[in-house]
Length: 345
Image 1: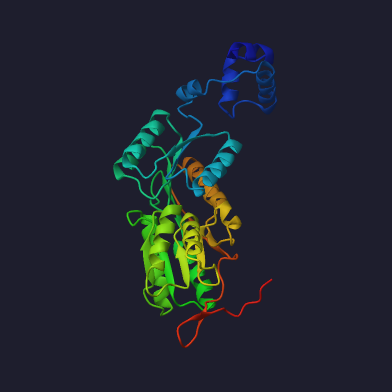
Image 2: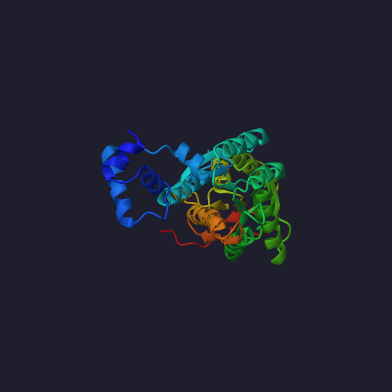
């Protein structure tokens, strides 16, 4: 099946078929409908690579993520792809696994496929690779790691607001011994969340707080929580840098024969889908993947429409309270803990 047969059935020229396929506004709605009916009847599949060569546009967006095994990112990929499909765009997904060599390969693939824009949803990106995109005038949008400039937009996540809401919730429950399990300190997003936590405690006059470094994975959260429990004075509440870390911490607490939230309250970050089904269900700071995907797509689309001008977009996390947080345990004079005053239902 070829374009000439489509043109013959639709009673138009091959040029009109080509313009219809490429979304030209020079084709009338009636003609466009006739061509599309012919395409469907003949089951004609246009050569998208040829279209890219002819128009200079690939109808393909790149999406670079850090870790496909973290549920946060597949949920983000799904949302971004859903929006892209609605707008006639395909998506080329690249998973870096936090590996610099792999990041470079991902960028090379994007350049070879002549993507129309790239959403960089990773914590780190080499400046040299960013320049490779910019030198080819490929629009970019970053997740809280870039700056708004020509051909580049940035989604700013108000991590401080999310962490502050979590700390306020914990403090209102009577906790003063509050700890934090961070992500790897070589990642900017992990440093930002840890600094936000320290700032929240300082503003409330609570002190520095206990911190341990994790790896944003379940095993890292488990190991960091186990180290905390070995300390002479353990915390009564723990904030985790993401939900995977919090789930690992839940396991370490249960292994020690302790209870959540009666002995230790736990708060995660991200609100991945599984966090609502842990035992107990996880209180967490929701960072909406749907919202990030919508904003990222709109940012890439708008750069083309606005003559290459980038912009800054804000995303504000919100606290979701579930069953993993509760009142701080009281202390007897002899130092032994007693149950908080709670009504069990």
